Image 1: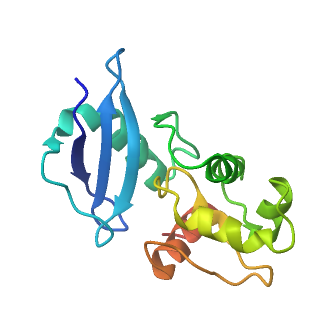
Image 2: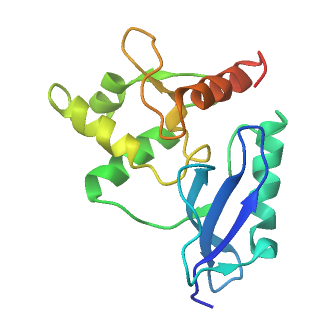
Length: 164
């Protein structure tokens, strides 16, 4: 099956839209995770909640504080630079934060490249799963989050153990 599949999953940040396709082994290749208000299902997509049971289970465990990472297959998307930035995001440990400048340094894009890093982070199609919420301003302030700064703050609080 090569159709685009989707389902909605409930979570403490609101409804999450999960989008993907089934790979040859039967496992879902995740294309995107977005939060309510960001995107909606597109005509022609197939609503298939059962295909996303593993994804939804891992998200539930994360939100319950029983999981600090994800074992999911992602679709390879984006430009080479975006993929480099997204891999750097995946390397940020649970419960920690780094600055946009630090991500720029890690991908070799210091200086003016910080803005490009911010743009790439903003295009991360896998919210929560690929932890762009762990990137903050150099002064420690919360900056930019596609799903809203209130949700970013709640994710960071969840990971710090102070609630969510």
